[in-house]
Image (cartoon, protein in one colour):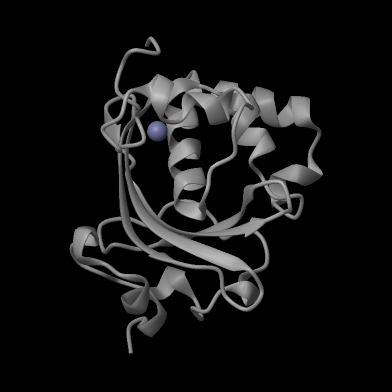
Length: 181
Ligand SMILES: [Zn+2]
């Protein structure tokens, strides 16, 4: 993949004019959503350093050595995982504690098997830039994937794993917070 190709993050922009400056450490995403998109693009392009440096210091993976996380990411990406497309479903600006949220659907294939998932991610600005704090998987009725990372008490949903929701394209953060009441 070259820099004159479309960015995998779904903006429709060229990679060189979209997420490449973030991956190279030349710029910081202006919002949690842009950071989230840049992380998806980094998965799609194997930019493991950005996947590491965009983690908030409180993220679970930050307790492991950087080289181990790099190796783990490379290992996963080397197993025929294809990050096909990203759809941002809903966003919330920073709350009183500075936590911004992004609900997204990621189309992902692992050796031709569909392992797509929906996640409600939380982000905090650390003074330098937006950082990924943790992600909570959201069941879409078809599959539940991933594990709850970080401190779930910071989430405004009681237990996202209990949720069963139909078409993820119609999902909003309000739906997730209402749960299956
Ligand atoms: Zn991009």
